[in-house]
Image (cartoon, rainbow, N blue to C red; front, side, top):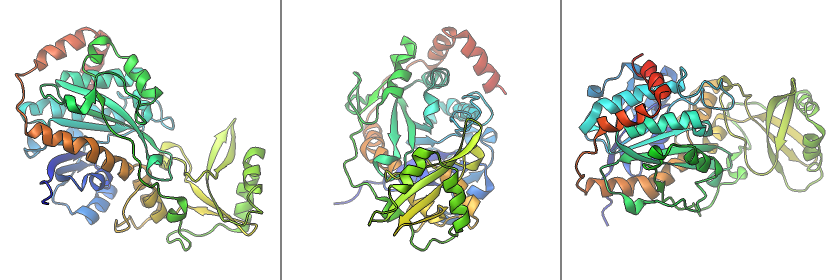
Length: 403
């Protein structure tokens, strides 16, 4: 049986190409963008430079993009939305680059891809941020809904992320969504609260996307951790003792309970500041903590291995970091450790993208491309209504969009 032809898409905020890796089975990238030269170097080493444009998104115009994409993917910066960040929100300097993307999509009009996917941290669901985002999508004449996908359902890493799927409102895609809130592993209290906080005019455009739960095998930490790591060294006994001394009684007890076990125990350790004091916290539940970048205010994650009464510690290796993000073994990582950590910690879990694509995005896109759109839905009227209902939001949009 012949496989269907690949669909075309744009990749905004491409990083090192982790979304591209997840979309590879069903999609063909025809244009990509990032402004970080180090990430661009890794992207090019793995995917070539034919599609990648390395420039600040604010300098991109809609006419720079080739025509014919069915999807625009955008994992826009999370620094102002994350718990580890400064809390500036979707209007701040880094996460506010969303508005440059919005400008491009606005100007594309009839050439705009029928599907837009936005990915970010859970902080995106805070009422001010999310209402602004939904107003922006509604102003483009889109219907939309959000899913919260945690990488731990595919990989041994806790990494919840929000995926907002938006579709041209002129298109009939009822077979892919429910109007009533469903029971779903991808719709938690945070998503429900974000929806409930929206004004009725924005709820009217909401779609509860149908995405089945994943029932496949979840990789174990034993498959992730290297016996002979490359790019890192084991800590000295003195350094390991220093880390153990930083633990609270509860965390130290987790270590002590495993000293006499016959089976090897693998844990993950973070250094955090608690009540003004730096502490080491460890978990042995078979799941790594969320990988983050040092720039986000978090320490680098370490692995703790307890075997035959001995405790050893070290930083996660670059390849282990990549495995925790679901990247294939063939993926060429940056040569410098900090660059590899930044690339992976700032990226997206590949299996989440693959599952979303296989179960929703690709079937949705193929259905859309075979259908005829209904008459235009009055984008200018939508902008007027939504901004008139929120004068404060209108002023804020004006400051951002026209900057």
